[in-house]
Length: 167
Length: 465
Ligand code: HEM
Ligand code: FES
Image (cartoon, each protein chain N blue to C red):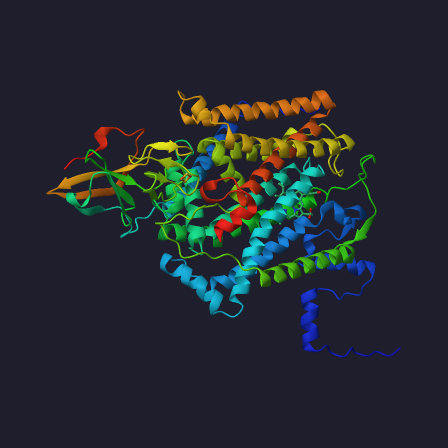
């Protein structure tokens, strides 16, 4: 068995080496991070102009009788006017997995073709698997004209009358 | 003896000689050398143990996967010349391909069916590796590489699914991307990045096109190289043996050229012929142009996701589409590191007891899964039974806990009642879960009609067309 004599300055030498190693390691890490962030920019959502997301004019209040549901395909929503004449705009994207939910006038329900979720006229869930009511869009009535802002769907846990807008 | 200068070779012979590196004479030495001198053959060792040539051991499934990948690359490159990745043009370019391009329909069919076949064949390859215990050390890492390849195969199919821009594509991807939104905290962000925006649009198509044509194929090429290299480094194929035979470590060698190359060529020819015949008779589906206003009823996911879609009918989405598949995938990846108390490499289903436990577990999986689906359909309404709880708990965590307890109990039962080793118990659980998943997939494909109602396959067929 051989042992190497340790010189007094031996400990400093590995320490310097460790420091340099760490330095390279950190630099490599930073470089990898930068490259990663830069390539992520490529994948980030891009705004595609002209696709839905603006304010949609729906027409005069009187076009919508109480108890009616009117589809607006370009805005991807239904404008519902409840029996008490309050307006509600319902995003037609099923809160379960995103299918377009059609209105079934005979049953007075929205019934999703994909996994059979059902919603009532206010968007409340009647039948799972949908986990929450249909999202809604903000409704404004300006000089007797109904306008719906489709830029941001509003999520909710349940329907309450505060969501209705009156002429 | 006279000194004659050999006649100079004609140039094409010189070219040939330089390309093949050595003339081939057919003797043993030459047959060993040709494997080393040829880029493709060189993926093989120059000699292989006789036992590994048993067709009924490997079924040639790994090689078949590789063949399909090559076929996909060739047909895919042809499609690239016609296809345009923009929403207004994609569907038209597929129509043009089918009607105006010579053999366009056939090439599309070949690409479509080879892609679908790849999912089936790699899955079968995985099963044969698991059933023969070939995933244990030193091959554990190659099992992981394999799992990654299977995931890439599914990702390739999923991204390709959007490209025709028909109704199937639009709604299949809408549902698929919505599943991602249930990942806690970051789900919405991931979905937005994947789609390149809030809903499917031109950015989505471009994202999927880039993934399908470059990122995924490059990753597959890399992982396949790693996979083949590891097969050789890990000592070649595991050696098959009879059920009562002690473990074998050595076997007589034969030359790869052509004792292995010949059956490979036969198998490849048979498969390619079958695929071409199939593609000449059955067209790849193409539905009407994508219509964001109209979800088809029933709107079904791609067939390889039907098992998950069926889970979605029974569980809260977070549990059904993320937690359960996630746990299953983790378990699959961890298998070689979990199970190792028995030396059964090379024996199908481990042992005699392993074999009948496998049969028993398949039967149990069938009965339990069908039973649960029927029960959930007619009687079980957990959210109604537990009205005070949020559906994530009543329709998610509660049945998930029951499921995990049931699986745990099944494993314990195997060990207690049938004195199964840990390894045989793992096999039984694997087969139980596998059968359950296959049954769910079959129910989803064949027994779900409009509104996802349960019905007989012929009634489903009658409503769809
Ligand atoms: C694109 C996908 C794949 C390709 C092209 C491929 C190809 C191959 C080939 C050519 C072999 C050698 C012989 C054979 O069994 O045919 C092999 C062996 C093997 N593969 Fe794969 N494979 C793929 C996916 C997988 C998957 C999904 C798994 C499992 C998770 C896997 C795990 C293994 C293991 C452990 C071996 C060694 C088997 C033994 O020694 O008996 N591979 N693979
Ligand atoms: S997407 Fe509507 S119920 Fe699943």
